[in-house]
Image: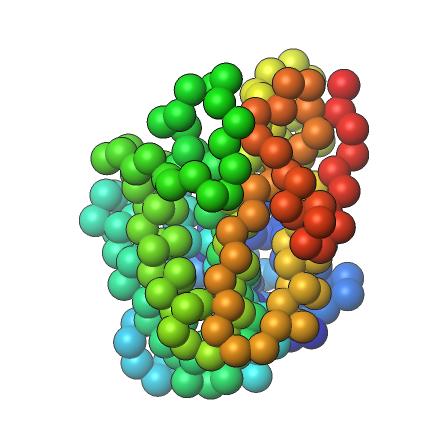
Amino acid sequence: MRVLITGGATRLARDLAKTLSVRHDVVLTDRGELPAGDGYAVETATLSHTGATNDLVRGMDAIVHGADTGLGENESDRLDLAMRCTYNLLWAAAEEGVARVVLLSSLQVLDGYDEDMTVTETWRPVPTTDLDVLSPHLSESVCREFGRERKMGIICLRLGDLVWGDESEGVRSSSALYFDDAAQAVERAMAALRLAAGPDWKVLHIQSAVPEARYTTNNAMNFFEYSPAERG
């Protein structure tokens, strides 16, 4: 598959690009300059409402969209990326016939509920003015409408608190998500979307199998056989 990954300034996007490039033709993009890729191509893209965004997505089989980098950007830029740029990206994707999009959202949109509650994908997000919560919530809103009304399949992966192998010692988060589990979920979401036809929107919770895990991942396990490794 030809895969476009946005949000290239983040470690998650870069590591996903490197991991997925073993089996796919990957292009990593960001609004700023990026270093040369390790097995993947890189491209600067502002995600404007112009032909440049159409050129970027043309010929792609799937888009993995990290809708908020949170890296050195002011509030206005983060909200712009979450809403206007997400809209522009999906509009161009619809025009160019890109049928599959994976949105990387966050389980933080549900942090407003008490930890002892069993919160599933059917529960409504509890947005706040904290941009770590508001940005993914707004991106979900944009993508949900495209998934329902435009001819593309969109899977929204609400990711837990990301952990890399070199940072795993002493991790105590009840919604921790190790990178290898995240990469597995993204690749399986892309494969699942290859079977989708017509408008589609699906939300799945993704975290690792850690002790006292806060969120259930049963829906992801059933939908595309997500199988996180057991963590002690």
